Image (cartoon, rainbow, N blue to C red):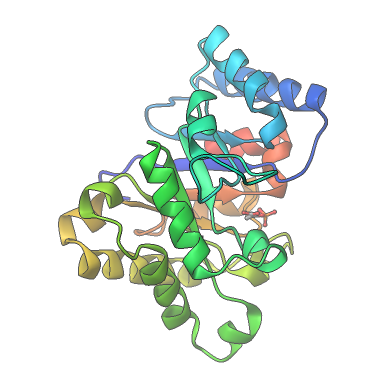
Length: 258
Ligand code: PEP
């Protein structure tokens, strides 16, 4: 992770009620503070459902917590007749620094194509949000040995028309679909192979110096017990964590992996 600040991002998905959500933020902050967590050394981001964002923002601002927060998705559009959608402008007003884009669950259950993901990456950047841009192959692609080319095609399509200046703030998350929510974590070597290939692709698309600064995360069944080995890999700069991120002790252990 040479020179890159590791990032641990907790994607809560569609879990917890509102009281549990605010409690989780407080408990996580207490647990990390108790362990004297150095937020400058490992950045921590919570990613609750939209409906919790205002309360999470109030907690973070009011108590000057060092946690940061983001959203799980955004609209490709800025404003207008898009019933049910949430624009990047709204998320920016709610203090979000980050937004997940192209999560495999959005691609699979909400028919998000690479084109839609690309439009959402650009929408996030227009509103000053850092996209946590997710890519990853399904099991069949992995078994066919085509995972690297599949992921690199997603990277290229998702970043079409994104300038070097915009891409400098980007976070990419490699999340093999077969490892998400399954308990089946990729080996550290598997994670490294694809994260390194993503960095090489960023160097090709932009420049080596830009590729050196972009954080590439691994996601898929990350837990306190397996995070250290994954974080030892040179091109893995953090984790996007689902299930383990709604258990405060577990997620804080992940954040304090070293
Ligand atoms: C995710 O949803 O981004 C994820 C990695 O989930 P889990 O950690 O539960 O596999």
